[in-house]
Structure formats: C-alpha cells, structure tokens
Amino acid sequence: MKLSVEISKYPLADEYIGPIKAFIEQLQQEPQLHIITNTMSTQLFGDYDAVMSALQRCMKWSFERYGKLVFVCKFIPGDLRP
Image (cartoon, rainbow, N blue to C red; front, side):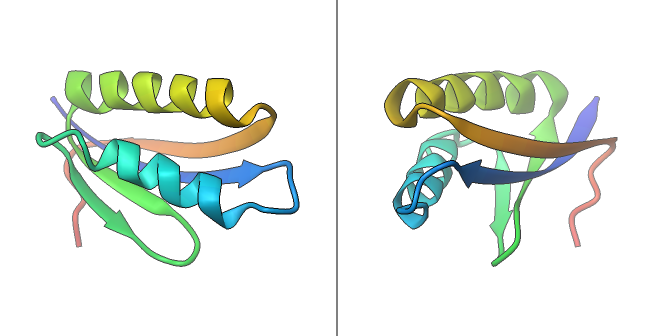
C-alpha cells in the first residue's frame, strides 16, 4: 500500500529554521521515500511501512535533539505526487 503524507514541524523556539532543515535532512537519508519540500510543508510519498518507519525514526530523533516541538501531519492513502 502506498501512502502520501504532508507534514509541518513547528519548533517551540526562536531559532526554528535549523531544526526544520535537520528534520528534512534526516528524512532524506531514507532512499525509499520520495520527498518534496516547499515553504509551508514537507510531503512524503512511498510504501506505507517505509514512510511510517521513517517518520517514527525522524520524529523521535527531533524530539530527543530539539525538545519541545509540534508536528502537524495529514495522511492520505495512495501515491498523490504532483
């Protein structure tokens, strides 16, 4: 099963750009994902298990490294790449 996810990260800190870029860099280490970024969100496309595994790993990494932050996600079944 394919999955599309739109995710936005909101670090609860004055310096927010670094943690967002670092999260995207962590996601880009997952070769099985197709990733599109823009100024408002990051979109992930791929196999359901691969996407969820990558999100679990990268979100945990972000929490451990940067502390308090908010993730807002939309999950849509299927591959909805533009």
